Image (cartoon, rainbow, N blue to C red; front, side, top):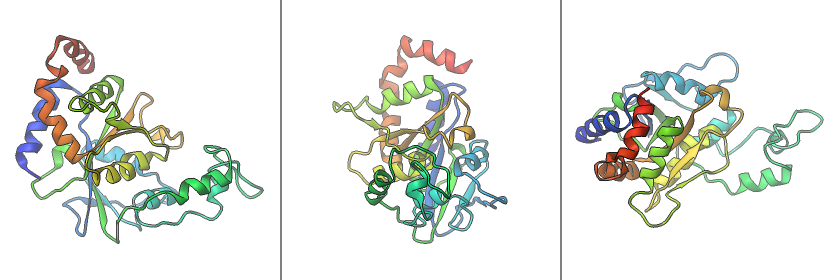
Length: 248
């Protein structure tokens, strides 16, 4: 990744989103990306909870063995299978398990899963780094902003600044890790990638502050957004009012 891009984004981010949290980036690699291997604690662990450490500046890499959630393994591309009876787990439950009731019927869950694409993890590692930990050797797929409403407003508007089609972002249904990794990765393969607004999954909500959502942007989309920052609404008095509130 070009050092100039790393540096220019940090300068512009601090200028127009003063005090806001830097994004977390991710990419797949055969190596470790200079990051620390994540050691899974005993019991079930949620990827979104573990990313709290990355948000604080710790670089981590994961693989199939270190992921403790079946959903994360699927959404990050390490398997195309889910736990037995998953269609009941996500919906109404049955005599052997309580259902999350996120989808109305087991049949609907099966239809959703049937149409899902799988990421090409292929035994590789996935590295997560905060933006200011990136180096020239890193090649991030996307940046994930953990954003409060004012920051989300700025990112959303900037994502739509350079196009006439009004849907420069979308909000797909899915687990927290699907909105942060799965869908942004798929969007990165598009000729006109969209940003992904997410973290609506009630199961992942305890892993983030109550007023935070995610805004995940494929890198080729983010590069365009960075290039537009100094000619966009960000230079207006309207945004200055919001920026001062973000800074507080």
